[in-house]
Amino acid sequence: MLIKPIPRKSLPDLVAGKLAAAILAGQFTTGAQLPPERDLIKDFEVSRSSLREALRILADAGVIEAQQGVGWFVSRPSERGLLKARALAAEIEPAHPKAARASAPAGPQRLPVAGEKPLRIPNLKKDRLGTFEFISWWEREKVRAARVLVVGAGALGNEVVKNLALMGIGNLFILDFDNVEAANLSRSILFRESDSGREKAMLAAARAKEINPEINVQYLHGDVTTAIGLGIFRRMDVIIGCLDNREARLAVNRFAYWVNKPWVDGAIQELLGLVRVFVPGQGACFECTLTEQARRDLALRYSCPLLARQNILMGKVPTTPTIASIIGAMQAQEALKLIHAMPVDAGKVVHFNGLNNYMHTTAYVPDENCESHWTYGEITEVPLRAETSTLEELLNVARADLGPEAVIELDQELILSLACSRCGTKEAALKPMSAVSFEAAHCPTCNEMRDVQMTHVITGGESFLRHSLLSVGVPPLHILRANNGVEYRFYELTGDLPETLHFRHFQETNGRQSGRAGNRVRLGRRVKLPAGNRPGPSRKRVRLRK
Ligand SMILES: [Zn+2]
Ligand SMILES: [Zn+2]
Image (cartoon, rainbow, N blue to C red; front, side, top):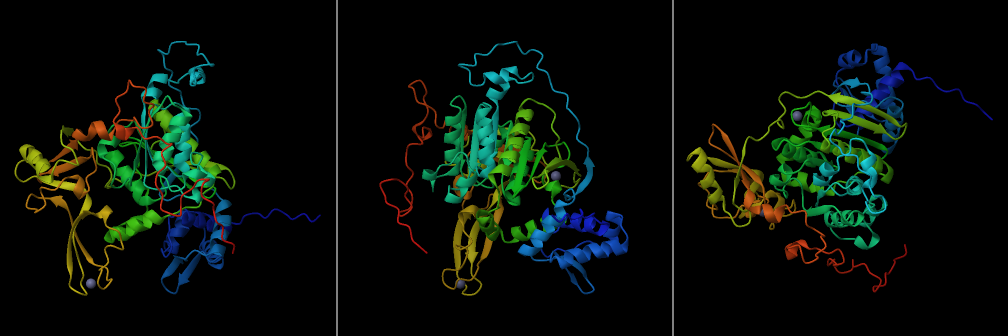
C-alpha cells in the first residue's frame, strides 16, 4: 500500500481558499473585479508574493482571470473552475460577505424558565403533544396560540412545515406560487407522486393538517412580492423564509420590518446551508448583508423589472433532502425560540458546511443607511376591501387625515401603457406589473421590446380612480402608505380580514363550524390538470424509448 503524506496547506493555498469561498458565497459574482492587490494584501495580512501566488492558483483553476492593466475578474463559472473553487474553499472556514468578526459560540444560553408552569403529568396515550410537557421551558399555550407564516413550500418549506406541525404550532399560513413537479419529490416529504401539477401551498397546508389535526392551517397560492397583504404579516408572530432568490428575501425583509416582525431566513445549496434571524432594530437586516455587487445586480434587474420577475420564476437551486432537513429544522427551532421569547442571535448568520461539518456563526455589520430599516407608525384600520373599494375611496380617507395634498404610494408598479418605438403603436394597459409577462411586453406587430410607462403614486388626477384596489395590484388586507410631503399615514384594508386571514382551511366540518364553503377545500378533490398530464391509474402511461 502506498501511503501519501498529508499535504500541508501553504499560505497562498489558504488565501486562494478564502477568495474561492468568497466567490462561491456570492461576495464577488461573475464578471466582478476583485479588490486591488494592495487591499487584498492588507485584508489577508500576507506578502505580495503570497497573494500573487494565490491569485495564480485561482487563475490556473479557471476561477479568475486577469485583464491586462486593469486587475483580476471572476471568470464565467466552468465545471472545472467550480470544482476547484469548492475544493479550495472546503479547506478553510467559509468566508462571508461583510463578515466583520466571527463570534465564538455563545455557550449554553440561559433558558427562560416558565415560573408559573404548573406541574402536569400528561396522558401520553391520548395527548400527542404530551412529551413536550416534560421540557422545562415549553409553554403549551404560547405554542398553541402562535401564528407562523411560511413563505415558500419547496425543499426547505416542506421540512419547516413538517416540524412546525409536529410541534403543534397552532396556526400555520403557507404561501407559495409554484406547482408540484416530479423533480420536487426527491426532497419534499409533504408531496406525493399523484400530486403532480397541484399547488404546493395547498398541498403543504393539507398535509400539515394531516400530520397534526389539532393545528389550524391556511394557504395562499401566490407570489410573496405581490400577492400577500401586509396585514397578514402584521398578525404573525414569526415569518419563516424558505426562499431561493434574493428578490423574494428582500420583499420578506422589507415587509417584516415595516410591521416590526422577526423573520428567519434559510438558504441551501448542495451540501451548504445557512440560517439567520432578523429582528427589526436588532443588528443587521437582510438588505444590510448585501454586497455592493449584489445591490448593483438588483438595481440592474429593477431597471428591467419584467425580466427580473421572469428570471425569478425560473430559478432553480440544486439541493439535497439532507441539507434541507438540517437547515429547515434549525429554522423551525429558531421560530420556536422566538415564540417563547427565548434569546436568538439576531443579525448573525450560522453557516453549516456539510462537506466538512463545520458550523460557525458570524455577525453582520448593520448598514446605517439601509433602506429596509423603516417601521410603519400607527396603522389605521379602515373598513375598505381590495376587491370592492376604489382608489378614490382610499384617497378620500387619506385626504381627510392628511389634507388635499395627500397621495397614495403603491408597493407594486402599475403599468399604464406599452409603447413600441419601432412601429409607433401604443397600447393602454392599466395592469399591475405582476400581471404582465416579459413576452407580453413585446410588440405583437414587430416583436420589439416596448417601452413600459408605469407609476406607483396615485395623485388624484388619474382617469382610473374608480378602479378597484385589487385591479391595480393591491392584495386583500394590504396596508397602504399615504403622504402629504410632510408625514405618512398607513391604512389597512381591514374589511378584508375575515376572508383573508382565518386559518380554517382543511377544517373538519362537523356542523358546529360555520366556515365559508370556499374555505372547506378537501384534498380529495382533484384539481384539473392540463390534458395529457393527468395522473391516475385509469390512464395508461405511454413511455417513449430513446
Ligand atoms: Zn438593513
Ligand atoms: Zn412594434
